[in-house]
Amino acid sequence: FTGSPWTLATYMVEGGSSKDFRKSKAMLYDNPQAMHALLDKLAQSVTAYLNGQIKAGAQAVQIFDSWGGSLSAAAYQEFSLAYMQKIIDGLIREHDGRRVPVILFTKGGGLWLESMADSGAEALGLDWTCDIGSARARVGNKVALQGNMDPSVLYANPAAIRAEVGRILAAYGHGSGQVFNLGHGITPEVNPAHAGAFFEAVHELSAQYHQ
Image (cartoon, rainbow, N blue to C red):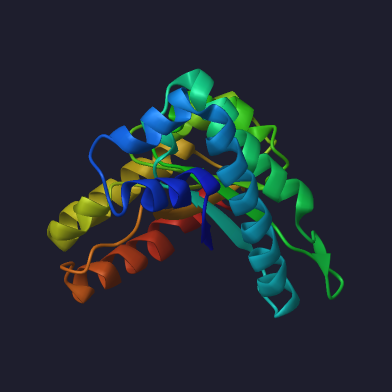
């Protein structure tokens, strides 16, 4: 996977992580030409990187837009989604006789699922702030949906983890098109046994929805 151009740009402009992205957003509004130039170079670099991974045998790729949700609706379309679209348009989509699916994820992007689904990606990643059943209704069969469980659930006991897995499966409902996953990355402090309980719950409880 790779970071999105906007997410990579924030680390470059801020010099690290940020709570409010003040430097990045100031640049975006004060000097949009410079921000577009940076994002375009990053999009070209990410496209080359992902195509290299595909040529090396990657069976799927994901664009990870951790900080797109910090933008306004208009700024998201112009400064984040547009450059992820450029990457998708430039990717090798067939390799070694098989389709290479693209997963597009924006943390906090639940408001823009329809636009994301029109990008040409095969799947959208969901964070934990939107209902997966509602998301499915909005995008239909256009894309698969991945994620949705709050990573913090893995700090809870195995019974609570199992209950949350069951709730999300029921919210999505029957049929194909769901890739069960966390709504963002796993954190280092999680007990590995709790991650194991998560996997077991998904394997055991999901079968009834795919018969």
